[in-house]
Image (tube, rainbow, N blue to C red; front, side, top):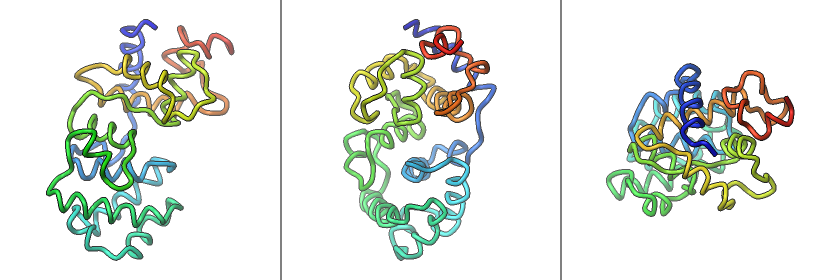
Length: 211
């Protein structure tokens, strides 16, 4: 893998095609963390509406920690997974107890409902740290470009995580993560990917097969 070419092409595309979401307009760790939890198995456009309503009603972790679970469930109902209400309240209570969202991976993973993806995404977006960020959506871009097998769950695919770690640049990890997500959402689609519009098609293992 020519890492420098991969980074250069994707970052340039990402700057020109970045999607706008409210959690991309803030580096508040609590808002970023909540967004990452809400985004699990949910579409960004739907989450954006829920995100705005959630923070209108409960602007910070202490406020959400005191909310009724039924009220939180009602606010996030458009996402279809209302059981996340108890997770969000438990996470809020723990962050309130700590006094802040932790800025290290181990402490983030100890929070209710926070897995490796959400923890690393929070480190990257809110704290400007370098960390590999992999879920089922971003895995599609890496696996197709690199020609990696796709029969393993993204969360436990050690080879995939290693390749993502190698590709993730220092100093622009946030932009990189967003570029991968946006490419997956707009171009590298699960069915009928738009390879003719992809900035990586020239060296993509998958693209070379369908060209």
